[in-house]
Amino acid sequence: MKSNSDTKTNQGNNTHNVSAEEVARFAALADKWWDPNGPFRPLHKINPVRLEYIRTQLCQHFKLKADSMSPLSKLSLLDIGCGGGLISEPLAKIGAKVTAIDAAEKNIHAAQDHANRYGININYKNVSTEALIANEHKFDVVLALEVVEHVLDLPSFIKSCSLLTNSGGIVFFSTLNRTPASWALGIVAAEYILGWLPRGTHTWEKFVKPSELVSLMKKESLQPIDLSGLSYNILNKNWQKSSNLSVNYMATATNTIKI
Image (cartoon, rainbow, N blue to C red; front, top):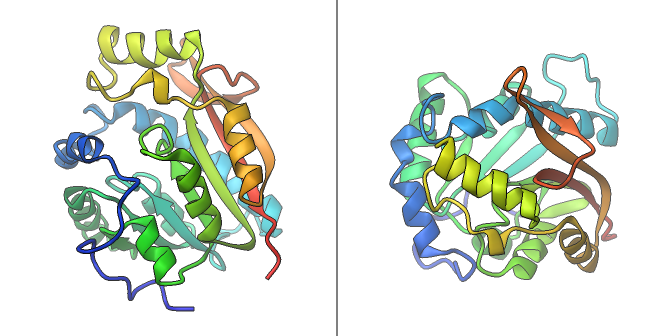
């Protein structure tokens, strides 16, 4: 197996699952990733509950010391569609050896610049999942947060996530359910009324029902171990984990392939 640092850049890589339109949309906002009041404000707001969820699941699954300052120090982690590094950085801070990839080169530059500014060691790469697979990379943890609703071919993307995960490793997905509630809240309210997201960020038809995601995971030897909703509390204006999967939800699965 090759090391996580020898992957070449995106030139010549197979990127059949990458939408040029989606890449251009997020690349145009590359300098706004770390502005808590900018176009990625919802991700800044949702980050604490996502991070707590990921940390808890990893500590339970890998039997790590949850009260440690660096509980993830033994884990290699891949953040797919990392954007500006909003998830990559805090996970690196608690010990994970993070490789983070994005199809938009401008996002990688923004993420690397921010990490360098604060002395955070993250292996940022402008490469595709297919390139990592071709180079035989595997990780203990794979994250695909707010990504599945943007890919061109969801089944092949789920397969890529499975191929990139070590046997017994964990994959996390975070996305939006395809329901009337997600259309009303995730698009109409978030993009057109409240202005939380730039208009056109999401396409409702590409939202993924939990049952669809679970079915695709199982086909690729990813055994679901948790489904949790993410709900917005209008009273304290914060996100929280819930049992309501009707809009935002997270799915966790373990790779059951025996090597």
